[in-house]
Length: 105
Ligand SMILES: [Zn+2]
Image 1: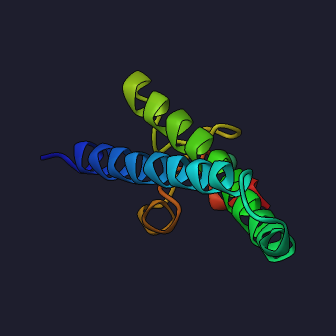
Image 2: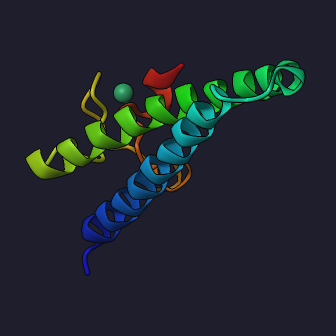
């Protein structure tokens, strides 16, 4: 397997994981709609945490989908701003980043 194919497999696995977790979060939030009154206050606090997780998860999903698209069109690993090659260490830490270290700042 080439390193790009391995990267694609990793991103796809991460994407599936995130999507699965979001479905779980939505089911959890839905189940709270029918909660008893006395439980509602504590569940509300929990819901805010769950919704926060849902939002950051959705953002990550979008970034991973964009990265998978860049793999398909052969642009993956190159900075979307300056076109420079993104370092392997940076891709290892942030596999879906569209920018090199310089442009990300
Ligand atoms: Zn750059």
